[in-house]
Length: 201
Image (cartoon, rainbow, N blue to C red):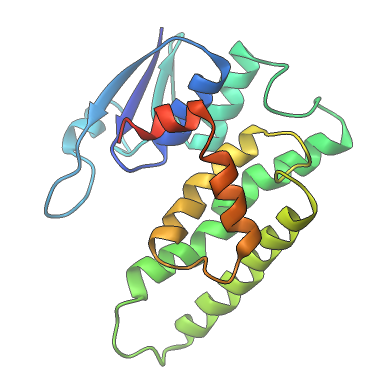
C-alpha cells in the first residue's frame, strides 16, 4: 500500500488530494511541526535524509518532491486521469504549469514570508520580489481569465500543484488584486477531494 508521510500545513497535502481524486487507497503517517521553530520533526529524517514532506513509499520506492510524486502516482494508478494525453500539445502546457509552480510562483511568496516583516525594505531584493510577484501572479490571473483551469477547461494535477501555493499567498494577503485567482480558488475549494485532503491539516 502507498504510504504518505504527511506533515501538517505542508506540500504533502497535494499528494493526499491527488490520491483522494483518483480514489486510490493509501496509508497516511502524520507528523507535527515543532511549535517553536515550525520545522518538521527530526523523525522525518529517519524516513528520508531531507526530512521534509512530502515523502511517499510505494513498491520499494522512496520518493520526494511533490510534482515528481504526483506524476509517479498518475503513471502507476491513473494514467488516463488528471492530465492531457502524453505527447499532445496540451500535455506540454500541463507540464509547463507543473514546473512553474515551484520554479517561479513559489519564490516571491517565500520572499514575502521571510522578508515581509523587515522594517528596512530598501535592499534590492525587495524590489526584485515585488517584480517577480507581479509578473508571475499576473500571468496566472490572465490565464484564469480565459480558461477554467491552468491547462485549459479540464481540472488536472497542475491545479493540485498550484492551489497549495495560492493558498499560501492568500494567507499572506497577496491576492487582493487578482480576482480571477480568487474565483479559481473558490471554485476548486468546492471539490470534495480537496476538502478531505485539507481536513488532515
